[in-house]
Amino acid sequence: MERRAQDELGVSTVQLVALFHLAEHAGCRQKELADALGIQPAAVTGLVDRMAAAGLVQRRADADDARAQQLHATAAGKRIVVRARPAVHAMQRQLLAGFDDAELDVIVRFLTAAVTRELHATSDPSPPGTPP
Picture 1: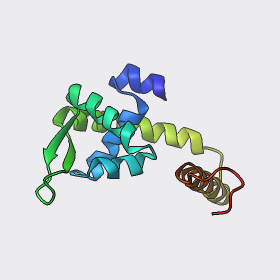
Picture 2: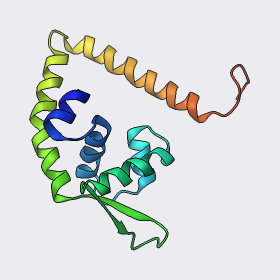
Picture 3: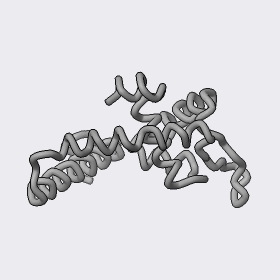
Picture 4: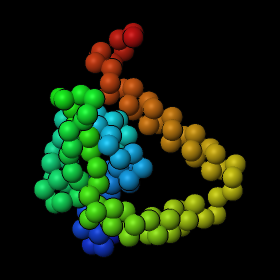
């Protein structure tokens, strides 16, 4: 997936996911994007910097909070999303082929639990074995 994103679209997979999010949530703040991507706010700052330098994302002043900025995909970023959708859908069909609905439910439940546990584990600063 990473190689295809780079070769066919000129972006990384995390940049592509960020563009998909911004296409659906135009004007979100960096913290919201970080939460959606499951990465630290500091990491999203560098990501947005690189995407802005590449002309894929634009920061705009937030009318409700002068300290905050809203993120928007540029026309170039939106074109990448449009070009990527058929390839992503094809890859999803290929990955899901051969699984029935019950099996997919188990897979979704497993992946959701794994992500939730990982996010909880990384947000908990106490050492392992320490009661919450």
